[in-house]
Structure formats: C-alpha cells, structure tokens
Image 1 (cartoon, rainbow, N blue to C red):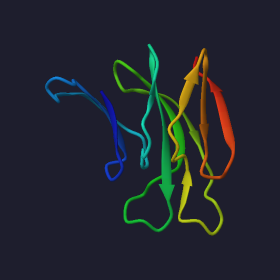
Image 2: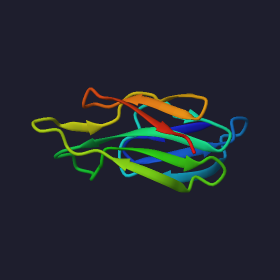
Image 3: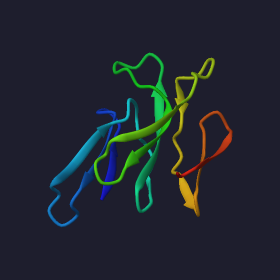
Length: 113
C-alpha cells in the first residue's frame, strides 16, 4: 500500500495486512493525491506552499516501487499570488505514459521509463 503524508512531506509503502513500514521517501512537499503505481514505479504529485511553517516545494516525482528511492523529480515554479503550487491531482497511467493536471491548470504527460 502506498500513501502520502502532507506534513511530513513523504510517501510511504506499507504492508497492507500488518501496516508495517517497508520504506518512506521524502518528496519535499505535500503529496495530497493518491499515487499511480506501475510494476516498477510510484508516481505522485507534490503540492508546494508559500508562507507555510514547513518548507514544501511543488513537484511531480517518480519513486522506485521496491526501495522508495527518488528516480526523478519535475519541479514546479511558484504561482504568482497563490498560496499553493505544483500538483494536487491524482496521476493516471496508460502504457508507458503518466498523466496529471497541475495546480497551474496545465495538463502534463511524461514517459514512465
């Protein structure tokens, strides 16, 4: 099971039957949405905030499904006059592509490999 923690700025992998932690990965911001999981990767959007007590940076990340190691990170710039930026929507996958909407109103698509 894969789950995000907003205040900790992390995504974790847990055994569903026991709740025991497999790994936790710092994603640098608030992973508000449900991640998309493929055979090898976990994809999640990360919301960044301006003026929040914890330093959060908006981005979209790809994690190794087995280890939680960050494979790549796509950073988002802050949105002028906005408290949040980055990604708040759940991603989806099809074939070798991952799709998601950004808080900036743009639809994004990346290769999963």
